[in-house]
Image (tube, rainbow, N blue to C red; front, side, top):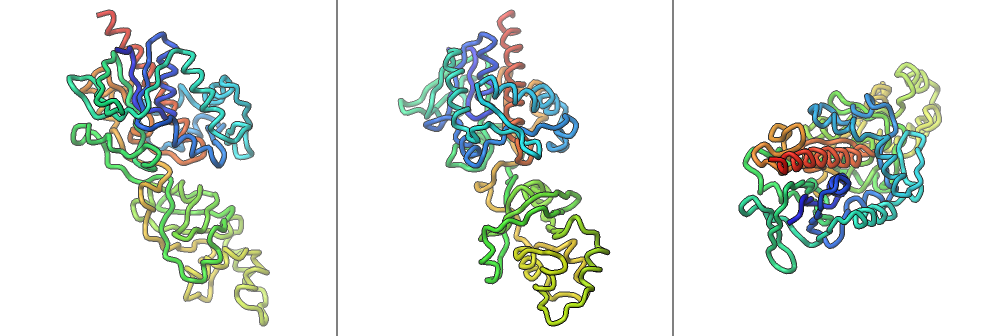
Length: 391
């Protein structure tokens, strides 16, 4: 028997294990994969963005309308706490021009190795290839290479991830272990959208559209997107995940720093024998990919193309498949949890991380949210275990 069992070894589970072990509880982590933190490592391949260094009120807006318990978790373990934690693992950090915080190494692997070493030094037991299979008499049951294993524990923290990137361990299969209605349906988040391009767009596949303004529904964002063979993706699109899932069209402002009157005035300059593309390049300084987008979605071209340049409708076919999404919306509903992230109908069992029903854009918000809920659930589990021991 172990005092505390953590199921799932992503950022939420590892943070929960660290907090639990610091309190003096014996801790066992069980994970279905052969090694830990696989999605965490994938996130760090292009530069591990740990958090966003900005005022807390601004930071919280990225999470949308979340319940007070989620806001409390983020306030307790926000950007400053993430920075201090990473530095405590011996990782030098730097803050980019947009406030995003990165390890100097720009990779997840050195940080993850230091984290696992710390947990090992704290006496945490790690079991890999242990796939959670539900409950037997309130005890967690696992399928392991050695057969079925039962592991009793005073408290259990579930940190099982969402339902994207199944090959890295987040397949959402755990949802069938919950009562009907306890888990909100999964949906893709931080995902690209599908576009059926005409042949002339092929030469632009992989090209970025920089410093544009994207609008969907009542949300808009200033950012960058990328033209891919299957559609449009990138940070600017990811920020609009929720309205895009609901079918909202995308409107792209190709010149966000130019008011419409200035665009019209520039377009009114004599064109002479220049083609429309050359005229746009000369008077508006549009690059080839923006001109290509205008030709793709603006035809038949109206006499007054200024409004199109300021709000070009991008015809898309909805989100990319959920398994290709960076993260997911949906998960364990907050109303089935106490303020300490404990399941109301299963005392002593807590939930944390992406398996909860929240979403946030990339840019450090996802990792911070996972670690914050892992820490919050662990503190509540420590209090529950202490109370139970005194009964």
